[in-house]
Each structure stands twice: as C-alpha cells, then as structure tokens.
Length: 382
Image 1: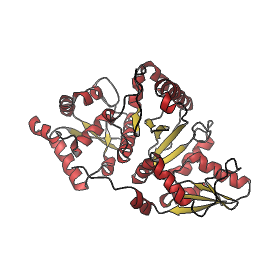
Image 2 (image 1 turned 120 degrees about the vertical axis):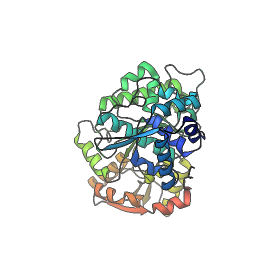
Image 3 (image 1 turned 45 degrees about the horizontal axis):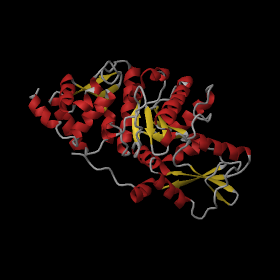
C-alpha cells in the first residue's frame, strides 16, 4: 500500500473525480461498477483514478452472486472523516446498510438501486449530497422552516432521521424523495426487474410525507402540493410489463390514482434529461408550447384526457411518460372508438407502441435534436 500522505493528496480536492466517486460510495454503501460509465469525465481518466484509488488502498471491488460493486476500505473512511468530519462522520456512524453493507443479494441490490438513483440526480443537476441542501427530515420540525430554492433529493436513509415516525415506512420500496419548488416526488427504482410493491407501506409513506412534510415542516411551500412519484427502470422495454403486472395485482398501485402523476424514467442519459425536464417547469412549458403549434387548445373535462386538440381528436404530450395518464388516454380512446395523437421521444416509441392500442397514433420527437437545442452537455470532472 502506498503511504497515507500520498493517498490524502489524491482526495484533497472537493471537485475531483476521485472525491466524487468516494462520496458516492460512502452515500450508497456499495457503488455498482456498471454505473461508472454514467459519471462525468472520460473513460480513460476514470479508469486511471479507480486504479489509483485501489492501489492507495481506499476502495476495493466486491463481487458475488453476479453483482460487482465498489466499497470503501477502513482507511478511506478514516481519511474522509478526518478531512471533512462534518460531511462524512455522520455517514460512517451506526450500523446502517450504507455504513456496514450486508452481503445478501437483496441487501446489495437495494444499495445498487440507491446508487443508480444518486447518479441520476447528480446528472440532472439536483442537490443530493446532505451538505448541499436544507435539512428537512429531523426528529422534530425545525424552528425556522427552510425553503427549497432548487430541486433537492433526500435518500431513504435521510428519511429515517425522522426518528420513531420513520418506523412506519420500514417496508417501503422507495429510495428517496425529490423536492422541487412546487412538487413532492416519491422516488422508486426497480432496476432490471419488476417492482414488488408493499402497498400498505407505500400508502403509509405517502401519508407520512403529507403530515410531516406538507403540513408540519414545509406547509408554506408544499401545503397544497399534490404528491407525485417517479419510477426508475433499466430501459423502456420494461414499461409494458410493469403496467401489465400492475393490472394483474390486487392493488393496482401505479394506476389507482394514489399519486397525481407517476412517471417512468430510465437509468441512463435519456432518463437524466427527462428528470432535468421534470424539474424545469419553464423548459417543459416551452416544449409543450412548441408541440401545440398548429393545434387547438385543450378541452378540460373532456371524456378523453388531453393537452391539445387536433379538431375533435385529442392530443397527449406523453414524453414525460406519466404511466396512468397514458393508459387512461389509450383506454378512453378505445371505449369511445376515437383516435388520438400521442407525442413522445423517439427512444420511447417502441415501448409505447406495444403499450397502446391501434386508436393511438404516435408522433416522435427527436431526442438528440431536442437536447442540443435546450440542455448543455455535462462538464467533465478532472
């Protein structure tokens, strides 16, 4: 092992890729190696940094049961805690899943799903590290309620800081909560498999957020907010299977109206851009305005949900992949023997064609052209 003095130099800069990776591992407990490609910087540089961190004895690879992840060594925890105690000592305190990762497949999959979500939030420019955002979840409400000025993500571990109240949501599958200026999103991540919902636990989580967050802690900002949800998955091809499985279950969790909106996003660059769009009302309104050119205004209260009308044909802007809304649109067109137009991004087309019936005509938006016109590419970290 190289000397700790040299290791210390490797993680000295807060803006370095090495510190970013160490931080992500510390927050998630175990960072899946396949997510390295989604982090900023070049592939060659990331490979060089990872090799250096391993040589310095700060990280190690743990591989078992087909799962490969990066974990911090005791030396790395000691060094991070010494360099930035306010940030890292709380992460390395107590017998938590992230501080003392378990070795069962289910526990490790949970850690991997948490890490994937952190990467998505990072890539969308959302404040995710505890020191980047206001403290919200504490055993008792703060004397001075904070204001969420920019989108902030709170992991399920941070929700546990509620104390005794958090025991009510112990079986929830949520990986965290995303707060924007006007919305509360419960966040799930199903990875490559179908989510097995714990319906009552999810309803308890929703009720807890309504009481503790919207009423007790941040009523001025979220008192009238309708709760939404985001479900991350590996790829768009999961969508039809997810909704079919939801239909065959007893509770119809995704489609029963439990959440005002229930979005499906992918754990990749497409999902990162859509997540940023969901957190940017002005950008979303601009895209809607562009799509609405040449169309008639929407008809609120009409038998078929719509964002615009093309004569008597309803039009839905479905690019955010609000699952219940798309299913309701398809079903209403079917039972009323109407046809309608659904706008989506080109990478969503195949899955939505499988999901929707012949009454739905699909119009694609060029994703790459849209991204070039609106969002800048993420900066590389050295």
